[in-house]
Length: 453
Image (cartoon, rainbow, N blue to C red; front, side, top):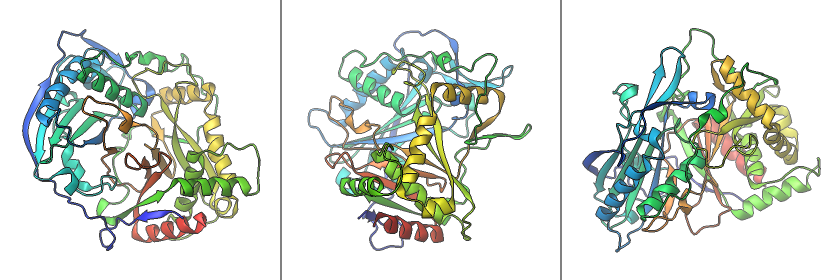
């Protein structure tokens, strides 16, 4: 049960990959909206406020003779330009309002960016696309860290062509712009505009729908949130708690049979018969158990482990599905290590399920109000970030659907990624990316297979 991509570079089973893709940048262009847009400041919710960092994704396409890369470049430039009217904030910049001390989008129309590059390799030569190749970082243009925040583009597209005619579309956006669902909608709109069609979905840009109540009403305890003491800056969310070079990383592949096995194991074990046993719930419970019991050098059965995972709150707050923003909050499950080790899988699944069910409309609004009163951010032992069913590879562009879509991975021991297998494989397969110090990784791997048995 549970196949494993061994991705510690010291292992002989490392996939054959090329880490230096030898990318040459040929052109960097500022893309402007085709018409003047209203100059305004856009309100950002308390959820958006703590997400001032870049999210980078790469979307790989095989060669299509009808759409050589140079034609795709022109169509994408046109599509992005048109998109900057309904998504006017993407042509703006992030700024800090000195009076409110809150981030806002300055919708000033100065533009997004488009980068054109090429690689010396063919797409088939760069190795397993599922493997989080460090070389993929060359396929996404970095935002300009050395440039003042108010001058950094919020959206950068990079098209990198390969010698075979295939290409990669790299997208870098500030996380304050989109969550996973609204980013997929943005990609669908880009695809539609590139095909000379109208928008697939007209975005709703009213982020006041996620404003705190006045006065704020914090009606629940929020152990999943950590307040920052006055006078201390909010930590940069991309900081590792140990240097990347000190982390091993591995991909644990769970097939549809593995997931069915975990579901059956939970269902047949002792505990409540009313628990919702979903693919995500059993995978999250299994990963939580392995992570909690592998953490640190000294096992403490009384230590409390807390796992965080995202819950979309659009339906809970009756928000439009087209809302372009971050409408996701961190649900949590907590238990002592002794319970996690000795309890049945179903109990852990139940706790994960309870975390999701806890996120009622009133609880979600209480979290938003908490953010109005306190300067802080989600806090737990680790976060499960699931890209498993976001469906980026389902987006139909004029030149076809992506062969694979994935985040550009920066390994952190406090984030475990779930992402889908390559197109054509079972939709139920999931890859679990884990980055840990060597000793913890050994323990995690041992537990991963032990609890799959």
